Image (cartoon, rainbow, N blue to C red; front, side, top):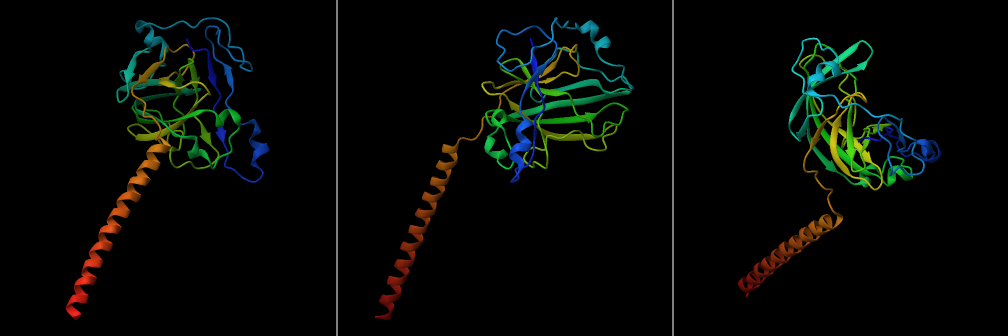
Length: 265
């Protein structure tokens, strides 16, 4: 049962005076309707009371908004593997209904070292970053330019983590909304950044546009981060190969030099 959702952290670039300004940028728990949790940590906001009804497949038409063009929508509660496609619909804003054919291609855990150019408070600096690669196609009639897809990282504590956004460009994984112009038939492939809170790890990626929606989830093998030892070992191997090649070249030059001296005599 999902008990809470983290706020979306915004990471500003590091500047000489950025430390105080970034003090309010953190991963904090906020309420998401669901059952109460016995493992809540001090400082977490209490979740809203009551239970959330899980829709059956027969209720799918009632859960999804009415979509122009009536694409075949994936039933709520469907569990998929990385690479599997789903057709989903949601209402990103009043009077706007979007429909996407989308898939989570893969999830990769990364190192916090990649965010060294950004100001991070304690909560963020103790988190576990994940890059999630997603492909989406607009299969509805609505222009969805600049709209965010309601995808979350589901962690091992049943917490929904929102994607992170950046105060400036982050080339390794932009973590942005859909392109500025994204009409019917348009396709995009993007990367989203999620920061799992301290002590948790990623378990799935979840499409959940509303609290009442039984989420569609993607799971699979998560790529682990590169280990520093592996990088050092690779450098040592490269250095060893370079030294060996240098020694061979030196010996060859020595033999050629010796041969040249004999001819002089």
